[in-house]
Length: 222
Image 1 (spheres, rainbow, N blue to C red):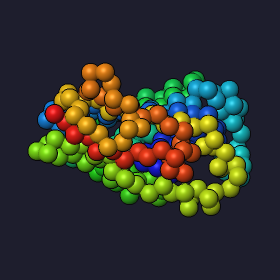
Image 2 (cartoon, one colour):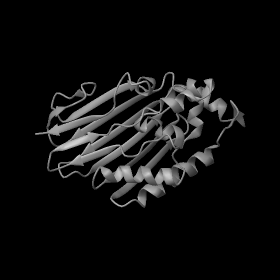
Image 3 (tube, rainbow, N blue to C red):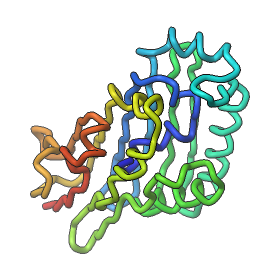
């Protein structure tokens, strides 16, 4: 899969059992390179179906994780993030009535997020398909880069029909907000805000898998 598009999906297996979810990936970066990172998975559109599935033992040949198991995964992910140098103020929230899950933290530099994701993968919280070297920033050159990552189309092609259907209506939104003013960017799929201090990308996850939309972007600040 592409970038963090599958991050919470693999972190929380129960949400692989519905094809109607939204992922919001949000970064707020200050002029000194520090900032806040937030990741939200919202499956509220499928809450009725998920509520029914949660009462089952298995579906599509897969074990249905219970609420306690999901909470343990989230809490373990939070502990790992808290132990990552440069990351602080880690917070999680779990709304099991509406199936909305959130992970947020502060960072000293954006690359701390990459390191946190690497640790999650090392502890098998993330699946092997998840890229971790997502961001890089150069304060001297006044650039922020969303790095190019593999599409993982090959992995997607190996999935069974039921697993592929998970992504049919899944959507991804990336929002990056800045203290500095954006001078230019290399990916026009990101919409620049009127005040030129934020960019936003909205896409179907399948469009990212099949590269109909690209997620990489180099942003130059004034």
